[in-house]
Length: 132
Image (tube, rainbow, N blue to C red; front, top):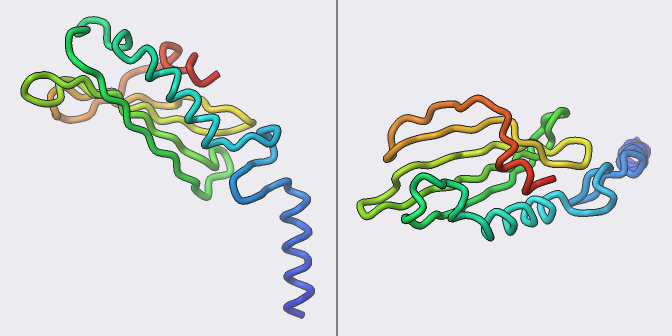
């Protein structure tokens, strides 16, 4: 009975097109690798992202996690932080969802000098274009 169950699970898994790092709608490209390509594009223009405080360095951190959501099975976060002489000045935290083979910016949280995060309204086309 256990063998029959294992065969059914394996067959269903194979039909879904899933593998360890890929989802069926990525044309074989690893979603994490695709996210990293967007990060690399952001790194090239990071000093221009936060234009009104150009004289301070910008740091980019990111993370990607799988979850059990059917809508967004993989979530990516990008933190863009501007560092002043006494520490962080401002931080934008973008939350991306991976669905239908692409990353979409869903939410942006902003904070000033380490204060409380506030949600900013979309669209987030200024950052989204690096992940298209």
